[in-house]
Amino acid sequence: MTVRTLTCQVESVEDLTPDVFRVILEGRAEAIAHAPGQYLELELQPDTWVPFSIACAETGDGRLELHIQHWPERTHSARLRELLTHRNRLSVRLPNGECTLPAGRPEPLLLIAAGTGFAQIKAIVEAALTENPDREISIWWAVRERRDLYAETLAQEWALRYSNVALHAVVETPEAALESLPGIHWHTGRIDEVLADVLGGEPGSLVGREIYLAGSPGMVYACVDTLAPLGLAEHQVHSDVFSYAPRVPFLPLPEGDPAQAPLMPGESES
Image (tube, rainbow, N blue to C red; front, side, top):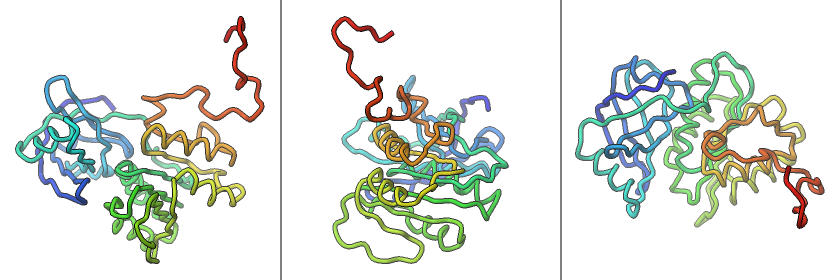
């Protein structure tokens, strides 16, 4: 799709947690068309555009949903909150991003998100279930604290409504024991370490899956490195990080690979 610049109406701004708020924008349906997994850019001031994942699948109703983390100490975050609160219209550029869910594909999905990376995963889940309610989907959502699961109820509803959807909530620093809840598999620790523990004990757990990662470069590549020994192939994993923060080599080199050895004085990399 061609990237377009347009003006959208701010329909609502809703606090989901003290740190995360949801924004609903309205625009012409044909102008805001996008693929599940893409993002838009909001203009904060002339020549300053900030990207946000579109947190909804395309429905044709002319609405866009964003999940925004608010950092009061960051200038851009404070400016954005001010704009959304006091202005009725904003300039946006969309659609952006190649990390999208193709239509008509049946492969099981492994979706891994950290924090507000859930916004991108939400759009992918909505599109996948609309097209094929029986598609196997495994969602792993990592947060620092339990309260950061700002859309826990929605994700739990997916798992309860669809037997083919599994929800894994990974809380890095729980303040208390996590109560048992229907539809939610609780885990404690870092997402990459939890994935190693759980999926590492399931031979063939990655075979035939399409994998989407949404988070910081550090989180994404930590997960790639964790999944690599389980048979991860580069073609089956997708993330916006691979475009704006590429890594060479993409997959970690095997231990003992000569390419890992440091160069000796006088040696060349060529």
